[in-house]
Length: 120
Image 1 (spheres, rainbow, N blue to C red):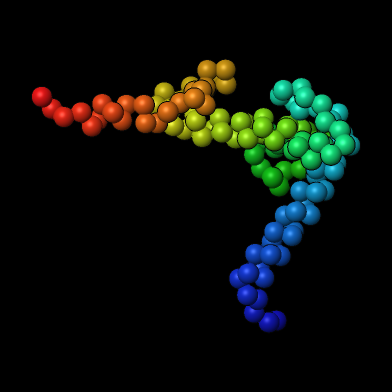
Image 2 (cartoon, helix red, strand yellow; image 1 turned 135 degrees about the vertical axis):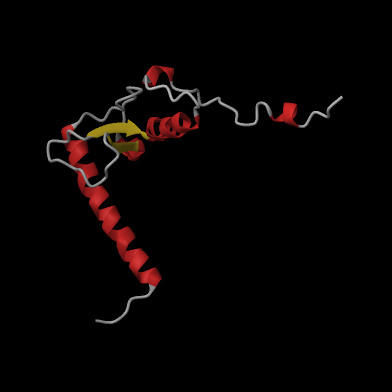
C-alpha cells in the first residue's frame, strides 16, 4: 500500500463527508416539508439550497432513517442555533432555559473602557 500525501487524505475525507451529508440531506428533504423549523420560512427552487439539516444531538453520524435526529433549518437559524451554545459557554451564570440564553448582542468588550481608566 502506497503512502498517501496529507492533501490527498484530506481531499478523500472531505469527499466522503460531502457524500454522507448529501445522503441524509436528500432523505430529510423527502421526509419534511421545505420549511425552516425555527422561522417557518418556506423554500423552493434555487432557494432550497439555503435549507440545511440540523442534528438535534449535534452528532452528524447519528442519522436514523426516520429522521428523528434532524430538523430542517435555514442557514440563518442554523447558524443561530450553533451560536447559542457558544454564547451559553461565555455566560457566567450558564442559564439552562433556551428562552433566557444571552443575546447575540452581547459585547465582550463592554467594560473595556473602565479597565483603561487611570487611577486618580
